[in-house]
Image 1 (cartoon, rainbow, N blue to C red):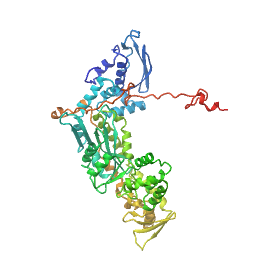
Image 2 (cartoon, one colour; image 1 turned 90 degrees about the vertical axis):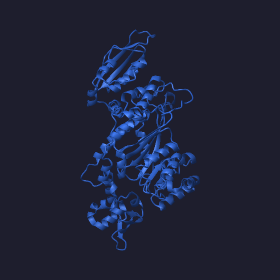
Image 3 (cartoon, rainbow, N blue to C red; image 1 turned 135 degrees about the vertical axis):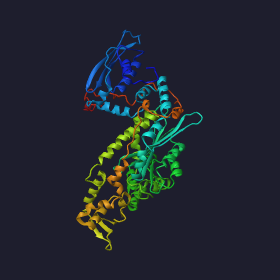
Length: 572
């Protein structure tokens, strides 16, 4: 186990995991068990672990077997361990193809498949906080793969944008930007609203992962670009926006949503001065709650932010101004109405009021934050490659013209539009007045506009437009509703966005890299050790099963959450 190179041959597997071996201590034996579970795709549970023996249960393909690992001598002073039963030599292919695999096995297989350094990764994560050997392995993972992974991605994903920036003097890693070619070409069929956010990496060298995300017409996450850097500052966000401008063009139709980060604001002002910038409604609301303590009136802020018309906005904001003057002053003078209010927003942010799509991407990549840099991007490619294939197949329905979500909205609006009264204005065939529920609206179906502004922003026929179309086309108006909605909701546009696949890089041993690139070495970035006492408790890796702590129960009522002395049965 002390070697630097990993051999995946079957003969070496039998020698490495066979019986009759001795180990330095129990810690080394546990590490070998975890490595074997990854290489051979099986689960195991530790039943009992004491000084005299270690008993585990192997789980794979619906069967289980006990493995007894005993102390050879039996004295407390000895540190020699020997495996008695040979039960770890299994066929990896048979376990992977078995239909009786448990859900943890399938989840771990997906997680391992996405990592470039599949076997070495678990060893690195297992004791990386206090094991010198694994720290060296982790550094080698950066050196051997960070300089070559972007070359493989370019060959597998044509026209992708990769940018690796290193320090000229020390040769250490600084930034890496990645945008897959499939996402670049699919962005042309997306609505021009993107969310920007960053998340911290939890590997040895820390850092941040910056991302830009769009939202398709099915309200799904559509990733655009990623960037690994040292921290969220002006330099990292400036580089990210500079590379992003290669395919996300700065134009008036573009809207960018972010969480009011100062570095993001500076980068957008410099690189995207023409596009419209909006603040995340949820982040701003949390800041107001923390700084102004307005929990009882915060709902008025959310209603004002979501209002489509200035009339409704003024009603909610004036009520908020009466109850919390400090909050109203902050929103009006410090932030500005045009940053958070839909009614005052100068561009079109559609129904995207928060940066939740970017936050959801960060949540999806929670496990990948512990990986080395090359494994992060390969796991992202594997995960979204599968998602692209599924989304491409889910709209394959020849009976509908628009995507399923839009079809559902249109049918609901047709039902609601039948309850409204419509009147033609000046005999025009395109302008109508719609009455209902004590309100009226003016609709121009040719311009796809309405005084309620829902039709203007979303470009999908709402109830007022449906009532006008019924008056114009009669009972057969349901066949013409698609002509008065934006074609970005059509199935053809959705399929084109997911037409091209995202390919993952194979194992590093199978890479074909030119000789001139093999000489390039990228050293890991510098990192500062934290002050204070170091952690004694080991941090579990993402592939290790976790056990939940058993909750104590009351000895009287047998319910958790309290104890015998505070039980409600004692009263009376």
